[in-house]
Structures are given as C-alpha cells and as structure tokens.
Image (cartoon, rainbow, N blue to C red):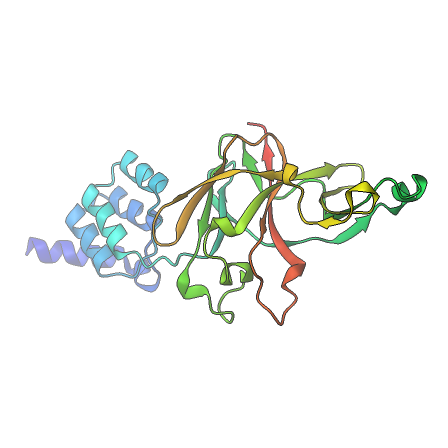
Length: 261
C-alpha cells in the first residue's frame, strides 16, 4: 500500500514532465523534492531525456549531491544529439557554438606599389565587419571543442556545410587577425603580388598559430593554442576541400575574441 501511494504521488507531482523531455534541471528538481534515487532512476529510465553529461556538468551534479546512480542513469539514457561545429566556453560558463562567418570584402593596396614604381609589392587583405567578434573568450578558457557527427554529413540535414567534408581539427588553421577600431573592421593578409617577392596567395605563416589537438570520443576533439593567446582577434579557417556546385567560399571562418580576465 505504501509503495502504491508513493508511485501515485510521484505521477501526480510530475504530470508536467509527461509532455516534455527531461534534462539536468528536471533531475535536480526531482532530487530537491526529496524523492529516493530509485524513483528518480526509474523516471529517467522510462522518459525521453537530453542531458548535459560533460565533465563540468557531472562535477556540478555531484557538488549539489545528485547520487552516482542517478548520474549514471542520465548518461545511459541521454538522447542528446551531438551537433557538428566548433564550441567555446563563454565568460558566463556556457558552451556556445561559433557560427561560420563571411569575409565582407577584399582590398589590394595598389597605391603603395604605384608610389614605389612597382618595387614594393601589392598586399591583398580580406576583411570582416566590426573590429571585435561577438564570441568572447576569457584568457583562461582557451580550450575549444570540435564536434564531428558522421550522421550529419548529408547536405540536406547539415547547415554547417564546412563540416560535411572536414574529418578533424587538422582541416582547420588558427589565425591571428588584425583589428582596426577606427575603420571598425578586422582582417588578414591573403596575398602578395609584385615587387621582388613575386606573387603568392594564402595566409602568411607568421599569422598561423600552432595548436594542440586531443581526441576524446564519438567525434569530439579538444583544441588549444600551444601558447596562451593574448587578448585580440582570432579565427579558425577551413583549409580542406570545399563541396562543389555552391558558393561555399563566401563563409569559411569561425571568429572569436580573447578578452582580459
């Protein structure tokens, strides 16, 4: 009789959960209402759920007292979809995705070559709007997560088109951008023509930053610069083969700002 009463009370108290999926907050709420771990585990095992089971999230769950059996049930029953893309930790501690961004224009400084009668080279630059990225990262949080989901390589289901062909973070390079507050733009040199150096295109090696890559599991990688990045503007640029028959070149970077702590 007591067991029947507890089950009835449980179902009555959580009618609102029947029409929505469970998540970390749902489990915390169940625990705060002083239900036994067996009941919470049963609810998790018999409900649709999307749980954040990252190391940081598990640590927080343990700190507030969520039992290990409950956390294990969350891990085993999560149907969370791993999105493809590049993610970072915001100053508020949330994991956010960096959306692909397009260069808004290119420019070559023909005036320099003209003044020097062709001795100096013409430098070509690609520009982005705004002198600073909207993706803000603290100096101490410079670890990026790259997710590659094999099930999302179909063009019809994946809006993050650069990850349709990419296989690992090694298909990207980390680049330092210059920033001009007066002109309110950011950019990078993408070519040099004329002068004694001849002609060459591509990112200057001096602007490329070496990174360390560690593979986790299920298509997840952690990426960080070999040396801590100083405050400023940066971006990851895809260097692999782009899909054909569409103008993919318009958006090929993932930008961010390193801000002082």
